[in-house]
Image (cartoon, rainbow, N blue to C red):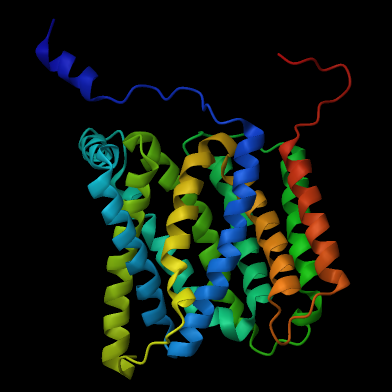
Length: 332
């Protein structure tokens, strides 16, 4: 046997086995991920508002998450082994180098939370992010960027995506008529589009690393470096924000991000990018409903539009999850 050929076969990753996660469990967990997105948006938005500097808030959020993940690598050997597998995968060109930069999309998302979530309000911020996520999910599945490969866009998925957009538009329809600075929606819209790409490439890294911890650590590492550089340049131009709030809950955004980034990387292979995005929509709306009920904020009362939009988003997820067959067409 040729030793070179044997080494090549040893270094090449084996074909991933079918996911052991049941689809219903993956969808349910995706909804919970969406709820964490909404909570993190409120936490980081309030932190940026109280500091008066969204760049500093983003560095605190991403940096604290990086510290948590670094400790995780020290404790769990599988995470450290995952770094070796990723390095081998890139060297052997089984994984593209640009798959390691999903953290840039996460950095943009967290930065948009700190900069515009408070002035826009969580509802308006969410509708822009969700619109971007839905469009991005369709594109990622269409071109096979995620670890599940190219997925056909059945009519049910398209209908579900459209209903999801209608749901969030319905939820914030009253506020959209009164907003003066519509240009502020551009940043979360772009961040939402980048989120779909982030979920896809992080899923690819997780498959190669065989560890969600490794994929999440690399995500936070690249994002933290980008945010520190951006905050440093911003501080040189306008000054550094050094007055930090005392409320400990405002510093939990990084931990929340660790959980939902790792969770998304874990389930995206089962759900696909589009279905993951649609479930995140449902989770965001359900969490917004709960926040309005139990922790209301001024100017964002719970109304009929919020209830209707939440129900419609859940219907959208169900429609997109089911592949409807015409009568007489049997399963192959």
